[in-house]
Image (cartoon, rainbow, N blue to C red; front, side):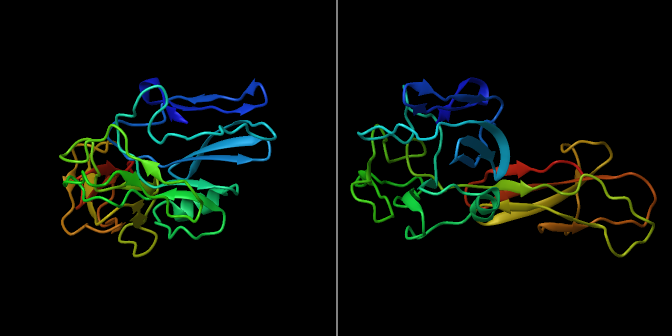
Length: 252
């Protein structure tokens, strides 16, 4: 599985001599964390993006696996991006399981977890030159990784703060309210990441840019006012206090 041109996701495998590849266009967005799950269940491959099913394809009854080492972050060349929370399971995870555990860090002893790399060994942006091994946290033998072509110091080619924010559930697309209503006027967003901050905005157009920050609206839920009749647009910007990354919701 690797990143293709124009933000596409490319998966590939073989069943005997038959190739089973899949190219999913417009999957990634530049400078945004994206959770990817590639699941084989029987003879079906399913790709999930941030916990939501995105694409399917026929899979072989059994997959040919390489006998030697495998790479994380390299196919023909090295991946120019950030990677976190790599997990390999020997069971087919359901959509519900993927969504429920997307932002959860594991211990390494979970049932069905064959290999697990949480990339938590180094200090983000610090001097990590003494770290040469990427630890596998499961009991699987000989599954530790070797850090290759990685400076391990400075702001690039090093350990980073980690995942987030990633919005999992967008606010409701529309709310139709009576004047001065006291129920049914709550907008909610769910997200994963470290030390998340929220700021809701009100806009006069159907856009999630250029709005005015709503004073005091700094949590994952927002009660939309209904005192004045009319059509109003709201969105929320979720940011991480750890890495400064932001994610903007869709418009409600």
